[in-house]
Length: 333
Image (tube, rainbow, N blue to C red):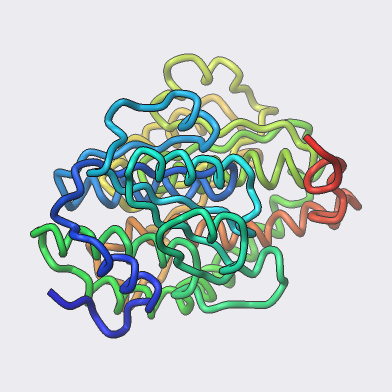
């Protein structure tokens, strides 16, 4: 079956280059911020196909060497710059086992691009500073790969609905920035003074919470953080909660929302509302986004808007974001 003409050409070329029906296992592999998009991608695949899949940190993927990795495996990798050594090594390892590899990067001539069978490019404003349309983001590309794979393996063909939803995503993001702006203005002053800020989410949104915790709060602002799964919160982490502790809770629209709702109720029962920043997707205008994909695209809205919140914190702390890092991309490690 042909994929929609509106699909990214790189995605179409990659998925058309092999027999999708031969795929028996999908591996989502990356590091850091790129790893965070793999969680919602797996969530989407789990929703729509019986294909087993796993999410791996790239270095552990090689070290663990899963026995299920073989010529019937599809390995989807991502590195924004394409220079992440562990991810490139993971691509080479996967190919050595006969697996099909798709590498996502903004740099088609990068080491990762050279190490994979097929390259899918995307756009990212965080390193270039140039605004993009969200339909060209890493989320959008990996969702096309996943739903294209679903359709090509005999699952329900929702590719046209996905494309329509992605086309409406940037407008939803822009409106979310306006909707969340007063709340961000209010919370930034208090959160800029915190030494520890926890993030909480589940389902498709967990990746956004994870990325914001490790790549923004810790990496760029040196604020101690931990991404806590909304249900794991009740299996130990809730003991740190008091009226002085700061939390960011992401309440999405997928099937795991009740888990986040439970966390919300507990946080406000024993914490202080002024220290609990809740981003609730039910308050967003998602016009044009198909209801069955709203829960999947909400994480990108959360992260994009939180990025602006992070800059407010950075300004108040007088601590630069990307430029202020001590180690990242500055020394050998």
